[in-house]
Image (tube, rainbow, N blue to C red; front, top):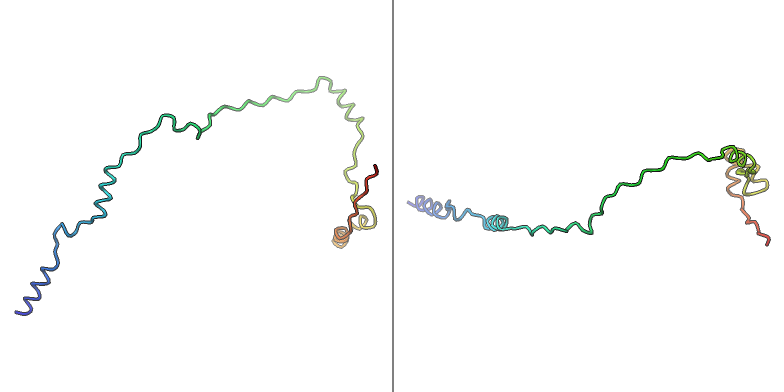
Length: 118
């Protein structure tokens, strides 16, 4: 009889009714989802956040000069500039083109600023 009594109590403590299995948090969540109403859309909500699109102006085609011969003559008459003038004068410049050692010597050479004569 003792085993039947324990078995009877264990079946009474575990209930399988629907009321004990419901999830209160889930029910609250679903109820709030169903009752949610999004705010009404504003007619001018985009103003200030979006720029108006305007097509850029097409580029102008290049034009040839009216007097091409005169411009070519002016170009030929212009004095060329020296682009390869060394910044440092002396023996260090001569070693610049002689391999890695010459390059390192050139980099280690002191650069003295040229005084401007007014």
